[in-house]
Amino acid sequence: MGKASLEVTRRKSPRKPRAATPPPEVTEPLEPVALPSPPPPIADHVTSLTSISEAMGTDKSPKEILQLILKSAFSITRASSASLMLLEPGTDVLRVEVAEGFKDDSIYKTRLRVGQGVTGWVAETGVPLRVGNVTKDPRYVRVQRGLRSELAVPLKVGGSVIGVISCDSTRLNHFTPEDEALVISLAAHSARVIQTTRLYEETRRRAEELRLLIEAGRVLAGTLDLQLVLGQLVEQAAKFWRAPVAAVYLVSDDGKNFTLAASHGGSEAWRGQSPIPIEDAFVGQAMVSNEETTVFENLGAAGIDDRARAQLPPEAGALLAAPLVAKRRALGVLCVFGRSGRKITKDERGLLAGLAASASLAIENANAHRRMLAAEEGLRGAEKSTLLAEMASGLAHEIRNPLTSIKLLVDSMVRSQAIKPEAASDATMIQKQIERLEKIVGSYLETARQHVSKMQHKVVDFNAVIEESLLLLATSSHEGLRMDCTLQAEELRVEGDPTQLSQAVYNLVLNAIQAVGQFVKSHPGNGRGRITVLSGRQADRQETFFEVADDGPGMCEEVKDRLFQPFVTTKEQGVGLGLSIVKRIVEAHNGRLEVESPRGDLGRGARFRVVLPSAG
Image (cartoon, rainbow, N blue to C red; front, side, top):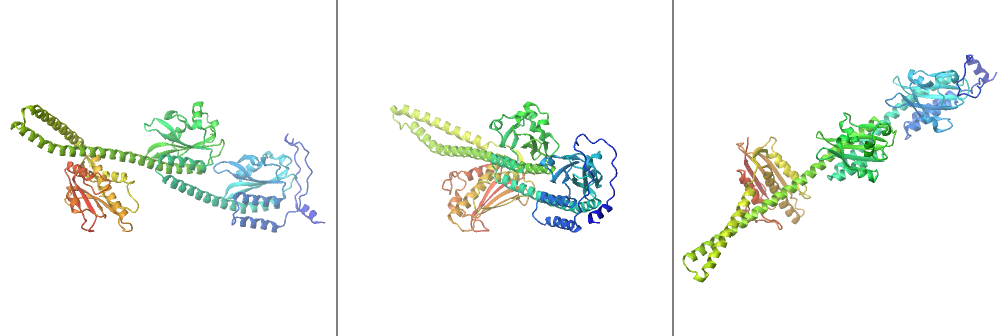
């Protein structure tokens, strides 16, 4: 008796099928019982397991490893077709990942719920199942015509089913207990390989996401221009999610509307849409949601009305949105518009939330920079007004002195009758014009005094005033300059006008920056260029001080003697009113301005100290 007959004696006789009406979809007659081909040697199985293990150490993709596993099962069982299905993460749905022996790719559209079909039953119970005649099994779901028998084995990791290997044959009773044992062994080994590959892919993907977030953060932090920040943001978002359209909607300054501030993709008509009232904005749902992100995987089935639909780009079939929030204040919404039906994973949602967090910080920084520039412009405007007032005051003062002398001389000449009678009327006219000039000069002085002395009186933190002024000077520093700032840890309370105090700090630090910069420019390689800023309380704590020291060239005695007089300057393009304004502000706050040049500790440079009464 040959080898084939020996194997037949080991096989149990197939159980006689009960009479049953075959399903309507099976039209061809059943084949007679066929004897299977001899199983492959055990060595082939060992070779398959070895090749699967070795694949983990190569650059093969997860799908290539799954294909290798299924080819092994397909070969071991001599099946007509085979598929490997995995559970979609977080669901009870089995999806075909790889397949062998099917006529077309329609098999990849197959979705089975746990418990559905032979494969679903195996996924639900975790028990292998060998069906000799699928037409007699009510659990069977046909995926291809002509199949007669099936062997399904679970892929389990730690007792949990992650998928199923399913082998099919066009022959009745094709799969043997030996086939089942070999596939169970293959599945046990492969499940560990699949899990390890999944973990590796998860680690690689998370590393890639982290790289993308870091890159996005670097790009977003690389500019303080709001429009550049928004443009980079939508470009990065569209790139990450391979989305046709990405957009940023910002809340208007009055908090009433959403404005499409930037977009990547989308039609011109959509990009030109008018501001949308917040209560009517479809994307506004991302702001009121308690979730980090809001998802609509199918906007067509979301039941939105025509007005809401008009707010969205025509290409939008799905929406992933994340609120932009900084300092607990809503800034707007970051939106990614994808194709309809795209499955948005939890990780993708988390990635968008991370990008939105980085973007919120970048937008807030850009807004702060914009406010800083506006404040700097306002401060410069206030300084110009003060300069004009100082100039008017100085000019009026200089005119009034000789005018007074002229008046006294003319009056003396009139009283002494030194003027001829025919010139008496001219002398009277001169006296009237002198009186008119006195009134004009007096008016200028009064106006200048009112402008300069207009001051608020409230308790402020001098440290906060200093920090704000230093921020305004961020764009005024030059290459090679080092500024060390050491402020008192506790609040420094003084009474006065924060705007005028800021102007005094600003002028003193700017004066030091310009003095050092001018010296470094004329003496390259000198190694100087250091400014030190200090604040604190005097020993008796009754007075608060602010100090600016530089290591520049310092001042000569002639300049020091006239330092606080208007129009005295050592700068080529200076006006010479900055320090006179500082002195006037400090004295208006009942303080004093001290100067030391050259510095005693360096033998060069200058140190200015503002001392003000403490307010508690």
